Length: 168
Image 1 (cartoon, rainbow, N blue to C red):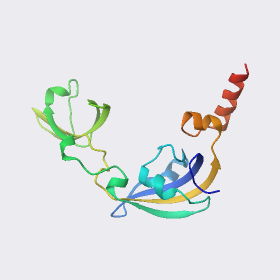
Image 2: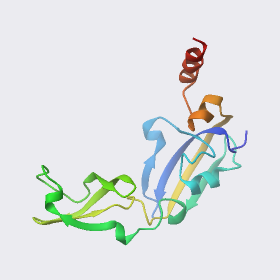
Image 3: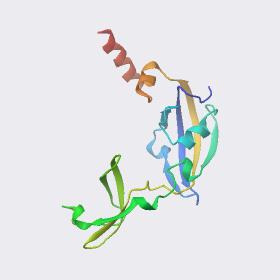
Image 4: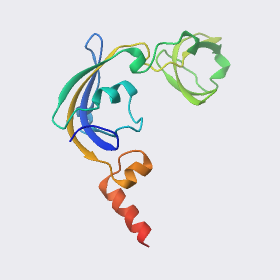
């Protein structure tokens, strides 16, 4: 079956940066990625590149930053007062925090800190990077009604319980 909108896709992937360093591998979790094609459940560039592939296909998909997590935006790097982190005694580069942004909660990464100031970066950690997804398409199937209604794949037992709930 071909990957197209309204289909559930199961795949394994290895995500690498442009230097071929492995950043993520779905096999390490022993759980393939499962998503509903055409419902913006994955990176837009990856979803577009997967369209038309079939179960059993294997591909290396190269994504430019704008097809993945976007360009690194310098205005998302800000320096704030150390007092913005009450109750946090030790601040180290790489720590992540939830912050309130104009569009809701955002994760920020601590870049540097001293006794009075903290520099944080609200860019996605992979912003500005070209990425390679090595994908193995395990299977493709038509989405069930409940999955289309929810906008993402559901476990078979979840859909069965929802059907039973509607009967009662």
